[in-house]
Image 1 (cartoon, helix red, strand yellow):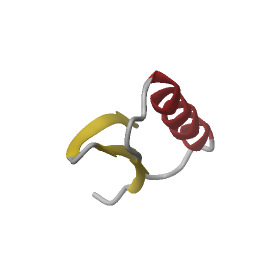
Image 2 (cartoon, one colour; image 1 turned 180 degrees about the vertical axis):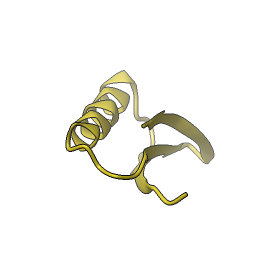
Image 3 (cartoon, one colour; image 1 turned 90 degrees about the vertical axis):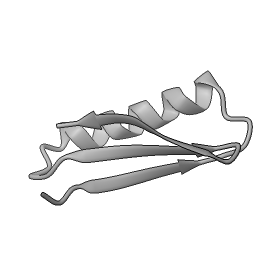
Length: 54
């Protein structure tokens, strides 16, 4: 199943940066995309999935 991947890259990103990412994913989800939207957060050399918006 294909989806749209949004990558947020930053060093020293904090709650404000994460909140901006969540808002962006929320706006994409509101457009009723026919495929899921994934958010990938990359910061300080680590990678972790932020969330999946169905």
